[in-house]
Length: 99
Image (cartoon, rainbow, N blue to C red; front, side, top):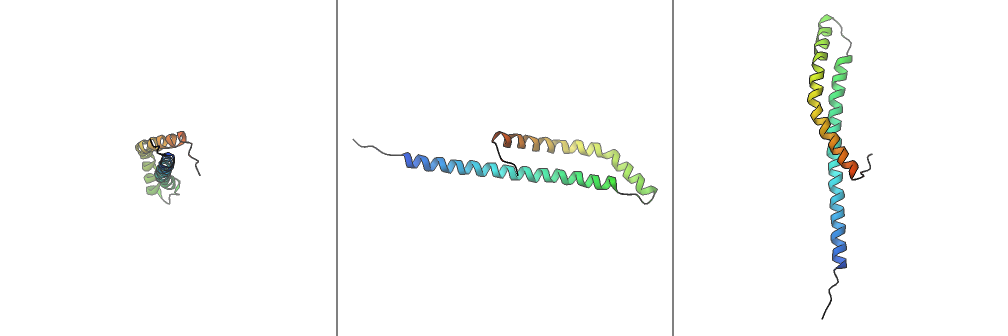
């Protein structure tokens, strides 16, 4: 009779699995950061348009018109915000250390 020692193979496979899992979590975190930065850029753009100082009545009317459209645009961003929140919740479950 003979005995085969698979402990080293099992350890190697477990280490590879752990590295792959960590890499996947890092990739998901990078994607979430890209999405959240895009959302922040959208809000910054909206903010800059709203706080712009009008030079005449036409520019003031444009700003007022734009401000009336902002809630609809934010509602459209809500889908992306929810998606990003779900990703961050999942990363939180994996105890990802946010930078």
